Length: 152
Image (cartoon, rainbow, N blue to C red; front, side):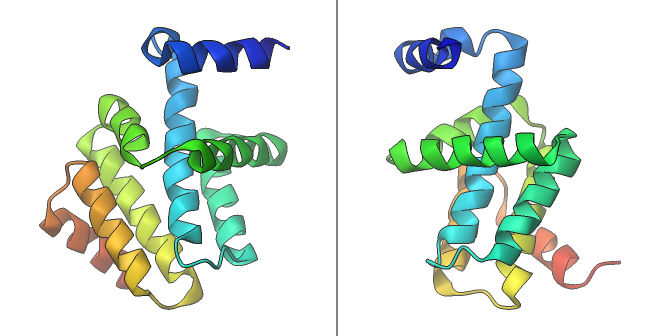
């Protein structure tokens, strides 16, 4: 019941609920997870390998149990399904993430792209779009890609 009320309040006044640090952190986690999920499913093939990779990333990055990671992913998928664009997620990330954290996110997005060993045009388009939404340069985007393809 509390989650329903919280969800309604979030829809009515998202900036007010995000004022609380815990809510803001959770909202950023959802936003990051939403972008990861969107990248995995942009080619209409959300594979088990991609799902496992994303769950592993959010477990490690946020120190979540398997159950909490799955719940976060489910919430992110629900928000994605109810959204009209990705700007709302990028806005949350831009507000709370440093450039270094956004670069780490872009690197993770590249890793999702190459989980299956290839990049299709939809994945390429989306990673460029997300880079723009996160206010990263083309050079930063390409450097992140090269770090994924040729780790040091």
